[in-house]
Length: 175
Image (tube, rainbow, N blue to C red; front, side, top):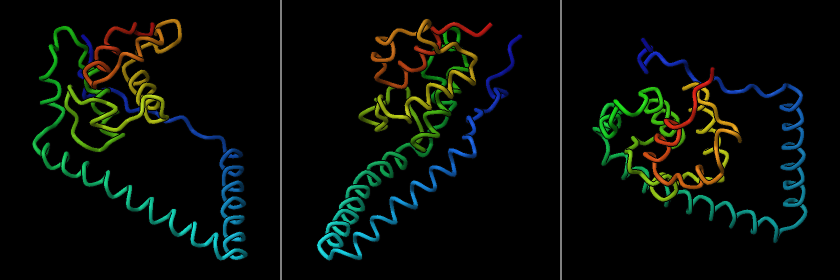
């Protein structure tokens, strides 16, 4: 008998090599140091940086309000209600739980099966966040996610969280 989905192993994030971390920090220090040097040298550049920072803060505030409204409207929503949106005799419960938890970790709002990944949850399909979700669910459920097991069109046809669950449900299991 298969273990219940709540006993599924956690996602193991791949560790970054120590020398890559050092190289990244050196790059960031040099990059921001050059910006500070340029800002110190040129008054007009200071205003450009200030306008850029204000623009980022304003635009990020617009997106935050939409998420907060969605989060308040789904206060009572949880993984149990999400799972009830599927026929669990046809869909693997491990897939349902892994998809819910991976998408929830990415957006931090309760997920519904019919949420549009791009429009409602604002996860770009070409973004690293979506790739992280695919790897997370694949690893936790033991589903094979390779070029041989997945056609590019299959991933392109994923628009909702429900599609993502059915996509992983049809993938073969590791042997």
